[in-house]
Image (tube, rainbow, N blue to C red):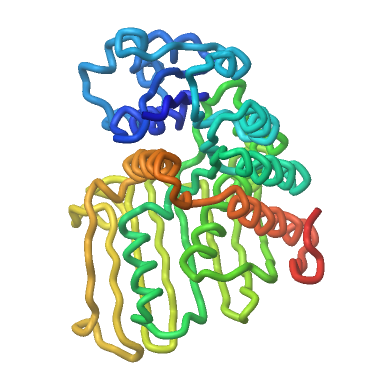
Length: 378
């Protein structure tokens, strides 16, 4: 069993749940700067944070101390790295710490699962990828947590694309409507562009990665318009509308809004022989569909110029929720490390998503198109 640790007990609680269920890894340590998160397994939730992750744990476990379940606690990454038993670290700290801490973990010879983004700029991102490549030669594995690649509904879409169910792909769209980011982060780091990268880097990078994964091709040009006028306590965009092209001429559209009261993620893929439509909710009963459905995700597909009756569909329950998907991604990563298989998402994938995201920010600032083939970002 690989001895695993989680650094950062916000979204890192989903990583803890993954290691606690893993057949290939054992959770032996956790690390956080907030004492209440180390006071008990449920300390993060007792403080009212990350409650969406709470159902991943049995209620009786949440009242126990970490030590009671055999998990050591640390207050800093430096302390954690002194624990020689730890072989794998999930790094779930604030975004602006990712590049430096990722290199620290890799240099210390520990396997690394890094939460996105890989860094906040291309220079540091490239340094992380280089450190990962050097560590790989020493048998140290690394990956980045774009967990939607492991989501069962997304994987169904991917299988349809790969099977040629809708022919040659020419267009993709991703529309995300959600509540604002939480305002209870440590030192409110997520509310500052210098620490989070802003909406486009912090979260829209998910959708660039997803588009690259589903279509198996690279982003070529990017154009974006944004507004930052809605949430004055965040110093970056509230809404981004992005248009992009792939190297083969296929087109991409992303709409991302932090102004919602509920959650909706809708993807479409348009091919020469048909279309795929995929929609996610955060809960089974959402106000956005009049609370009329009892599933988390629906994948539907049909022929070009077809009728509604010709459309096929497949629904997914709680297993398609984001907390469950993060947990499963962690379990998959641990299995890949243990068995020597390719990881779901590499640091290089993370760098490609970062480049597209930064390009969107540059395009919005310029009010013009950024051509990554002719003007790669440094």
